[in-house]
Length: 356
Image (tube, rainbow, N blue to C red):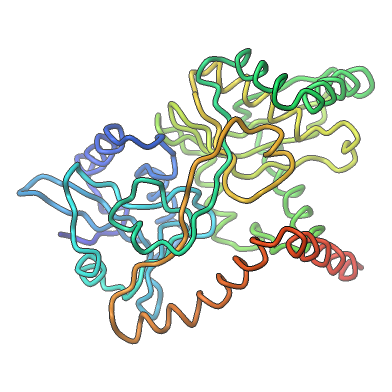
């Protein structure tokens, strides 16, 4: 086994990585592709890839990051919606030995892909990630919504028509290249984080730089995709995510609050589903975390897992002290809807008090 920086991987190794992902049963999330790891490597100096071999042939890849105290984490932890190892069928290394070879005492994950048998025994929680299936085309998806969420669909389409009449004409661009539209999205999203009392992800330099890198990435199985809904010449809602040939990973959606009465974010998601289906993409992955809009839009759910692999020693204790109390507290709140609702209202109220 070798442990390399992402930029040290040769093209043959990257191609082998892609072959292994293509042969996997899981949906081909762009977060599990070498291009995502490479982008993280450019903004996170401690990003590494463990390359496992069968003879002279690469047979597995484990992208990860190594902390200053030797604690490991999945690549892009905190923003990556799918995590895990990319392994040839039948390859089953010893997890503790793998961590030792990577010089880490633990490996934390919060969106471990279903089917990651190597790490699933170490999962502490299972979460639902919400998906939209457009494999049979957008018309098929709309027919599902008419049965499942008829009032939502009628209301959203009516608001789209109203937006077109009063502010339009409405147009949608699936893959917008205008940097100004991305800046507008980041501004809306940052304001949304602050308005709801959440930590502004874009205030963290590495995340802002990572999004900028991925906006320029155009690989077949990992392409940054900025989708924008316009009313007239003005952008009113936008989304930045990643797409493979078969999956659109929904990542950063936001809208201009001055157009909130038209629900432009919901209209945007319908148009994204329509455009994705036309591109041959079969699945939109809206990520984990409950939200009313996800319940209205989803056609199903997939499982992801949170937890950590540790090996005996002081590092395991450091991991537990650093992450487990907070994780358990969050899990306690999530399992109690009334408490979760109160926590959300408290965060929003606190954010209002902090405003000048």
